[in-house]
Image (cartoon, rainbow, N blue to C red):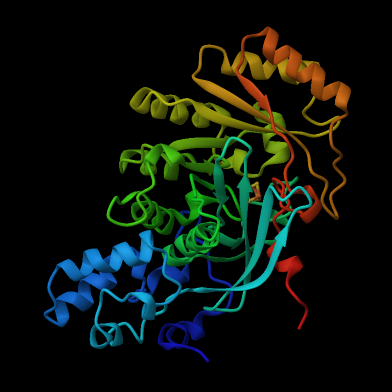
Length: 377
Ligand code: SF4
């Protein structure tokens, strides 16, 4: 049954228009009952003349104790809880919950209650104890990087802030059963965070608010494929978390070939924006570099990349390409991966060779394509 919010949104299930700066038709609608924006509970408390400490009680139950329904907020009386009855507790439905063979990766296919479209979220459990959630911020993605499964889906809508936070709440509740916690959040799932900036920023506010989810800012990483104007806005608005740039090519020509965004924002502009971020924050930037056989994995490419990052506060994540249906690219050979890494090492560039996690459930980098996995109706 559709709740109040969903019925208000039902007229907007068509593909929203993207104006290229992160606004879509969805954004023009006021999401009244976005609990996690912080205003809903405050509003309810104010409008019903409840004492302010009710807000603290709510936040503790919701974000700390990780209740599974409003009914479990027993610090609120039954009468007070009734005030929440028309609000949405969870904005997503779990369609599929897949665990990788090594049990280190869990991928969930969620269906939005808003419009029944699908998104994917991944939890990565590292041996060192980190539990990192990779969140989606869009259904599909308009950027269309040539190597990416999500890009092949096209753009099917921005997620609102509650939907972004709910992906994390799902895994927080899941881990609670094992006495474990989420330690890191990366905005590297489906979608380009800079093109849904407002909702991404709102979700970060909730995650880092010490009265709410309470995650340290440095435990949040936002990625971008290179939308410079929006990235500059994020930084000037005060974002001090970590940043990852999908670089994938060490020069302008190759970058344009792999990523259409490079035509809008040149590599020089991207590097300038990142340099400003480093000056402000003194935090190193992660440079994501997918190694594709015969495309960007030559000795020359490694040397160019080393030159580009020389004297910069940088860490390169080398990611052997994960094949996807309908794309001709192949993973670099072991020999080329080793040679590429060796050159970076010789040139004094910090790097890691990413261990591929979850490729048996298509949860590895660039493989998220929720719509394709959705049950056919
Ligand atoms: S790599 Fe990121 S920005 Fe590029 S198409 Fe995929 S999801 Fe979009």
